[in-house]
Length: 84
Image (tube, rainbow, N blue to C red; front, top):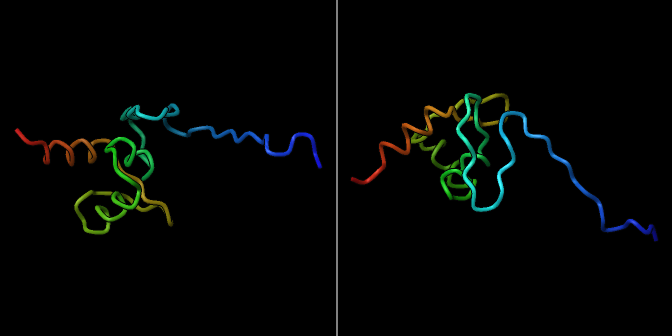
């Protein structure tokens, strides 16, 4: 067996934002956000974000098969639901 087995490292380079550590919210930059980034920012699972998009409650853009959300749309979505 290979001595390095089980020690693979995966390197992911973000396209738009800096990596997010657990418990930290991603920054809302000027680029489009992925479903995963939006889910982490809202503190929900990705299925919830997909459902919000499918229901028309969260504005989004489709790029082929990918769903992307604009930072302004996410901000409006959260502000509209903020309890005062």
